Length: 399
Image (tube, rainbow, N blue to C red):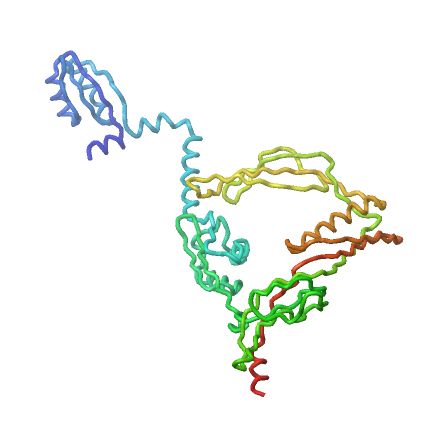
């Protein structure tokens, strides 16, 4: 306790030599001066006393012929005197304590776990609509209201749990398993034609085929039946039909390209800047003004992380490109180049095993546009599953 009091009120370590040491100690005792860690070495007294008592020691020393020298000063008053003129340091300490207090009372990181088909952005949008965002105070989070809002907005969630650990809010979700409406329909099916064509090859893995090679079929026509009739037992059995049906098919694509159109181009003027994101405060680290009328902005976030956990401190790098919109006139050659890009996107939608046998192109020029028409001769698998309607089958059997 004495050491604690000496630290708070200050203490001075001194040495005294010469004169009469016994008289000096007696005078200190009479004056009420308390000495700590008193010791003698080579005729020199060493001791420690409080800051208030040291003012009385001078008089005791002069009456006893002792010479007093200060060895060191220690304690809180001397620390304060040393830093008294450094006001910025105290302001920084106070600000750091405030930010630490504010940080621990707020949520600065939202983590979504367990979602698969539901995106994290959908969940965060619902949280934002209910007042939960990065920087919200923990006391403002109503768990019951938030849970109900998530169930209401996202019916595919079968279970969820919201927890707050430190400055992290975690939303654990479980999605409902999508079950077929009719178990029999999911188990038994036919193979029908996905589009019109001429059948070239049929490979049946399960089921009974109803058409042969060389037949022309229409979209939706039955190709392989999942119902097999057994003559011996006079009974139908139901199956999940599986087959590959390759046929020659036809496809068309018309592309209209206007003779005059608006085209956006980069002017070559680019500005790069950084923004410090501290909690919800955004501090620009640049001095120029953004005066581009038309622009394209891209941003890269560099968040501060500790052991894989993101902190609410980041530097966002922005790249601002100036753009301009000009009216372009397309001749037949440039129009065909634009149409070729749309044609490639159309072909990309074909099934991976589809073969393009032939493409016939026709071009028609009108007053305001060019019309490119592409006719495809394809070789592809047109097999498509179609669920069996067992209810109707049973009704027909009863009749």
